[in-house]
Amino acid sequence: MKAARSFGWFLVAGLLGLLVDVAVLYLAAPWLGWYAARVLSFLAAATVTWQVNRRYTFADAAPHASLLREYLAYLSAMLGGAAVNYAVYVLTLHWFSGPWAAAIGVALGSAAGLVVNFVSARYLVFKH
Image 1 (tube, rainbow, N blue to C red):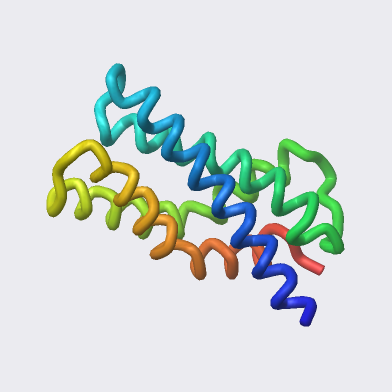
Image 2: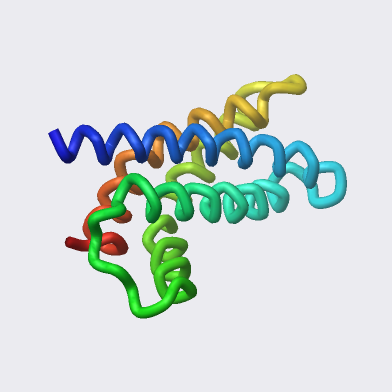
């Protein structure tokens, strides 16, 4: 039951992160292009998901010595999922065109990296 609750909150955090990801991507893409803007949008989304995950998803985890250390550990742990996420995003941009191709790529990439990110967050960052 506790694992299901944690995974549910992880999904909520992910949906919020997805919204931030797409918004920052579409705002930054005119200046940075679709690929570089995706790096910035991922960092923005990861920051939001870290905040939700530390407060709700893994609230019972052992606290870190500092918030900065925890944040950097979280970003590092998310790199595996980020690699999967970015690869799916790039493939989607190559397969689809149109104004929503990037948003579809972000959504598909997020779904592809979901399990990798949950396991990384649970066992590498927010340990019990």
